[in-house]
Image 1 (tube, rainbow, N blue to C red):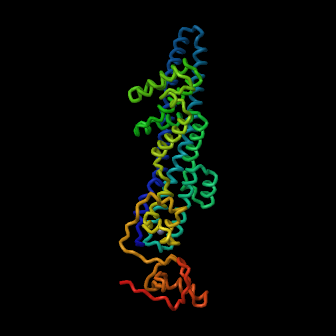
Image 2: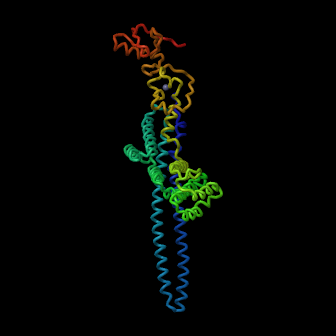
Image 3: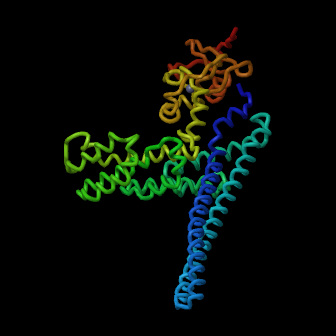
Length: 407
Ligand SMILES: [Zn+2]
């Protein structure tokens, strides 16, 4: 029952390692994007510079006075190239710093998980400290997800587990979710653009839904001409996969925001913003390997399902030491979980919640109720040798209790 199984624990730790890995990849992709864009700019300018140099050569030969203007243009081009390259250097040093940080984080997380593999039992001296760290990082993750950023940050700092917390990821997600709550698509559209290829791979329609929402807002404010231009630019490229929705969107222009006619009423419904937040959250989780539900809930549910038995939800049979029997708290979380597979049954004292075995044998009272020896003895010591049945309230002498033998 208490067999130590680190592999079983590591199965649910995958996101813990994958998150910094995905973040490193993202920072690397961003560096590539900056390089491609800015080097293309510099190459174009270099081509232009060569043209200007040739012009200047011809002008010098002809001595027609245009050499000075070519030289001024060449200077401008060089300045512009220099500015661009300086900016590129700054951007690359930022992404490089990010990459280094995420790689360092990956390394520390691997070391932390590897500590578990060096242990052989839960009695290992390091196990309690390791579990404590795990609990703290799961709590930090959970609080970030629920929007308690300050508390999560404080806990991560206080427990010196900064490298086990994904501050940047959750901060960015919270900013984007807030902008959608404020009915603004710009930040989320920028996020879609930064993650274009990854979103394409998972066949996400988030970008289309955001453009559709922008179109709906233009229709709502009756800016018909701008709405049509917007649709041509941003909705039509999706016609292969979203033809029907585009047709509906165009129909929207004939209805005001007060319409009761479906599907236009639904399109104007402001609850669509919440759907966009949910959609963004799902895609963001999927792209960054964030587990859903949160690892804290997953871990709790794993433990609860191992303890859940049919007695947990019967008032009479509850065990005070069983978390599932606490029906208002952890028992609620375990409601949808399967019952554990019990190969051997255990006798548990309903007074103390302790196991009844040869060291703490079951004792039968004259009314037929059974409790553990230790519980009844403790009660008898406090009540001049008398014990009280907690179920019926009847009182007996401890000496009247009979030891039971299980065969
Ligand atoms: Zn229980």
